[in-house]
Image (tube, rainbow, N blue to C red; front, side):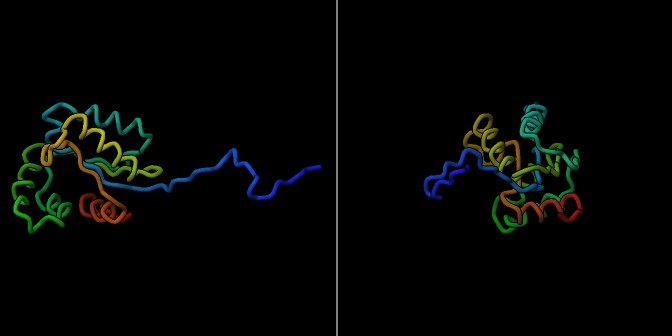
Length: 146
């Protein structure tokens, strides 16, 4: 015979957790290569069990960079910022996985606090802040819709 406890007395020993499979945009900036941290950053990304679905490396076309930072177009630092991003190679990544946006943003904060504390410009890595930004940045940079 099975005795059922009243709902308020039931213990939950197992609660399945589910995070949605997401896609996001990540960019290793020129300073990550100049400081030779690009491999370490990629290893950190692999440790999060995320998939690199697309990758591009080189000097990015100005229009792609401007498109990814369009929200800052009218700010005084915009031209200088894009010039910095064109000053060396970048690695653009389309990354996918469970809770990819949250995982990458957590990784980004960790990398910045370890290797670029307080830096606004030379902070090694960019990632999409949320799902809407990810859609826009992926479409702009890789010409694909997600």
